[in-house]
Length: 82
Image (cartoon, rainbow, N blue to C red):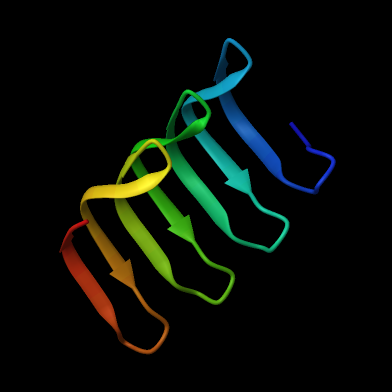
């Protein structure tokens, strides 16, 4: 699916909402690969910022929630609960 704003989604759908495993590329160059539910990141997923930062962990209704690892671009990182 290509949206008018440049966002792209490839993956599973349920009732016209992103649901299940999918990959999303945002107009700003960021990406998300993982589980969706009701159109939002939900479950296990990896969000990568254009600048190289990465969050690999759990999501709940589009928000980082539960255990995850965030890796910054200058050796900064966080491992734990969100």
